[in-house]
Amino acid sequence: MRTTILTIVFLLLCLPAGAAPTLQVYFVDVEGGQATLFVSPSGQSMLVDAGWPEGGRDAERIVAAARLAGVKQIDYLVVTHYHLDHVGGVPQLAARIPIRTFVDHGTSFETGPQADQLVAAYARVRDKAQHLVVKPGDRIPIRGVVVRVLTAAGDEISQPLPGAGAPNPLCAGVRRRPDDPSENARSIGLLITYGKFRMIDLGDLTWNKELGLACPDNKVGTIEVYLSTHHGADLSGAPPLVQGLHPLVAIMDNGAHKGGSAEAWQTVRTSPGLEDIWQLHYAIDAGQAHNAPEPFLANLQEHCQGNWIKLAARADGQFSVTNGRNGKSKNYQPAAR
Image (cartoon, rainbow, N blue to C red; front, top):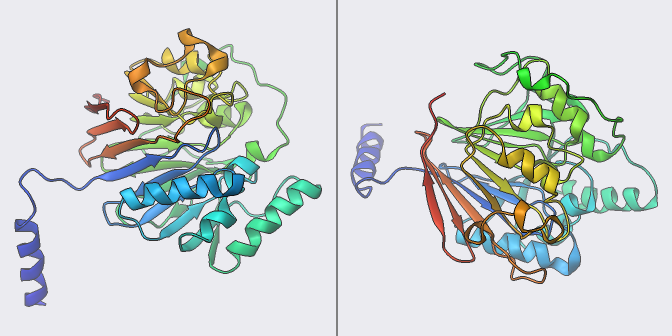
């Protein structure tokens, strides 16, 4: 025991001056789907979704990001819901890198030939590994960070998180929309916490389910980074949730013609305290007025190289965001809460 303690002390003393463990997040460009790779300070990895099938294009991009992060396996693959742009790339990815544990919300809420084939292809891979079905309130046990499940299978957390629960004045006058029967509304939504740093990823959760987290009381509280729900589509992005979270930075995982709607972009842009929006693509259909400045765009053209965006967060809440296309990087200080 004494030898072990002395070894740990020696290793800590040998760390470079000023070095601090970080949570790394790679937002992989999968052309309007999702593939977000988290690498905990412990070295464990969690990938949220795997993009489209597309001949293995997205699987190759995810593996390339994993190599950059020094990751040789995916410890947890979270499938937020069963749509082609989120789960379609799983078989191709599993053929390229080991996946230890699959996390999903259980049975699909959509049926029919295409939906059934999609889930069956995923299940054939999933059933060769460990499998977790999660519900709101659960945690995904990746060491070094806290990953809370906020939504799953159409349900949301019943009680506010610690420190949250204040009445949300932004709910006044906001109307519900027709209920969404699709898998989008069943998305697994996550809150990732590393010390004072907090980031939210709600998959493709739609309007009414977002309101379930935000109204009449804000069940989540405030965050540092908001991954735009549903790629910035106007089916999502309810202002009481987005603006109630008070993010410092938003990351939009849109495609050239998918997501990145002017309505959702404007909701994010006018969120109190927001400093910047970073986008995986220039949203062609939204126009220049509803896109971030060029340095904050990872891919400018419709036919692109699949450039990524990277985030590195420290336990004290400080974080940086870097554009893989041009090397643009910016540091952010946590706001006083």
